[in-house]
Amino acid sequence: MSLPPVVRRDPRWLLLAVNALLATTAGLLLPTALAAAVDAALAGRPAGAAVLWLIGLAVVELVGDAIGVVLAASITARGAAWLRRRLTGHLLALGHPARFEAGDAVSRLTGDSAMAGGIAVPAVNVGVSVLTAVGAVVALALMDWRLAAVFLLSVPLATLLVRSHLRLTASDVAAYQEVSGELSARLVDAVGGLRTIAASGRADQEAERVLRPLPRLASAGAGMWRTQARMIWRAGLLLPAVELAVLTAAGFGLVAGRLSIGDVLAALGYAALGMAVVGQATVLTSLQRARASAARLQEVFDTPVDEARPPGSTAAGEVRLSGVCVPDALHDVDLAVPAGAFVAVVGRSGAGKSALAAVIGGLARPASGQVLRGGSVGYAFERPALVGGTVRDAVRYGTSAGEDEVLAACRAAQVHDVVVRLPHGYDTPMSAAPMSGGEAQRLGLARAFVRDPAVLVLDDATASLDMVTESTVERAVESALPGRTRVVVTHRAATARRADVVVWLDGGRVRAVAPHRELWDDDEYRAVFG
Image 1 (cartoon, rainbow, N blue to C red):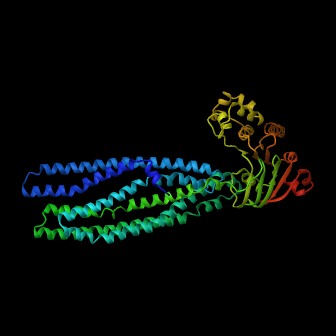
Image 2: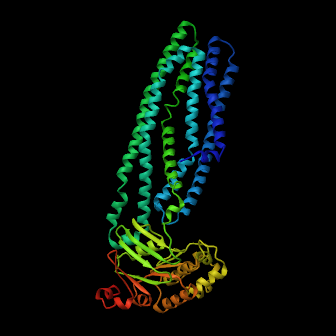
Image 3: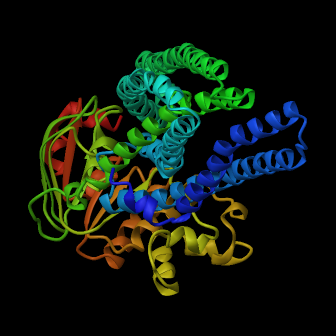
C-alpha cells in the first residue's frame, strides 16, 4: 500500500521522531557521563556535577521513553481509525456482493488497519536504532579509532542478520495475514447460516470446512516465530562477542594509557548501543506485519468501484442471468425476466430458490456467469433483521425517506394499523415494539417498498402472512409500485397462480419457466406444493 498518506495526514510522527532522537541523544551521552563520574571518583576529585549530569540524562531518557509510548499509541489509533473510514467507504462503494467476503473484510478493517495504521511507529523505532548505532560508532571513534575499527568488523554480520530476518519473515507474515482473513470469512459465513447447518445435520462437516485453514495458519505462525527466535539467539551470541572484542581492545588501550577505566566502561556501553538494531527482532517483525497488512488494504483500494458492477446495460426493471453458477446451489442458470413481470420462484427445499433470489437481488456473487439487472433493488426476507432506533428508522433504514414515504410504504405493506397501536406509534423504539412473525415480515416489506425499487425481490417474505393478507399486500404493491418487476420465492400454489410466470427449480437447475396453469398438469410440479 502507498502509506505516505497515512504518515502525512498525522504529522505527530515527527514529534515521535524528535522525541526519540532526544531520548537517543541522552542515551548516547550516558556512557560518557558515567565514565566521567567513575574517573572523578577514582581520582578523588569532586564528582557531584558529573553525577547530577548523569542523573539528568537518565531522567531525560526515561521521560522520552514514556512520551514515546503515549505518542505511539495515539498515532496507531488515529492511523487505524483513518484507514478504517477509508476502507469502509471503499467497500460500501464497491457494493454488495464485492469480491471480498464479509469475514475477510472484517479482518482487514480490524487487524490489518490497526497494523498498517501504526507503521510509522516501528519505522521510526528502526530508524532511531540505526542512528543510535551510527552515534555509538562515532563515540567509539572519538575515544579511540581502534575501538571503532574493531566494532565495524561486526557490521557486515549484523547487516546480514537483519536482512535475513526481514526476508524470511516477509512470506510467513503475509501468509499469516491472508489465512487469518480466510478463516474469518469462513467463520462469519458459518455463523450466518447456523440455522441451516443445524437443520441439515451438517455441523461436523461445516466445522471441518471452517477449520480447514488452521494448519496453514499454524505453519505460518510457527515459521514467523521460528524466524524471530532464530534472530534472537543469533543476536544473543553476536552481542556478547562484539562486547568482548571491544572490551579487549579497550583493555589494550587502558594498558597503553590511551584510555581510562571510565572509558573502558563507556566503550562497553557504546558496543551495546551499536548493536541496537540487531536486538530489535520484535520491532522488525512488527514492521513486516505492518507492510503485509498495508498490502492487503491496498488490494481493496486498488479494486475499481465499477468492477463490482457487471458490464452491459438493461432496461429499468429487467433482469437477465446467463450461465450463473453458485457452488452447491445453482448450476448453469439462464433466465430472462422482462421489466414489470411478476415472477414466482418455486421448488423443493434445497432446490436453490434463496440462492437465485440472492443472485437476482445482488446479495450474492455467482462463481461464474453474468447477472444484469436494470435499476435499484428492494429486498425483503422471511425473517427480516429490523435495524434502527425506532420503527420509523427501521422502515427508512438506508434511505432519506420522509414521513409521507414511510407512511405510504407501511400502508402498502398492511402494517400501518399495527404501528399506530404501538405506545408511541412510529417513534416507538424497536426494543419496545414486540411484533409477531407476520408483523415483522410486513415491516420488512415496508422497508423494501420505501426504496421505490425497479426490482422487488421477496424471499419467502410473506410466508407468515395468511393468504388473504398476502393477496391484499400484493394488490397494495401493484397500486403503490406500479410496473415494478417482482421476483417472489414462495411455497404457495395460490401465489404461483397469481404470477405472470413461474420459475421451477430442481436441484439447482431451471427445470421449467412457464405460467402456473401450464405446469399444474405435471405431477412432480404439484408435489412441490405438497
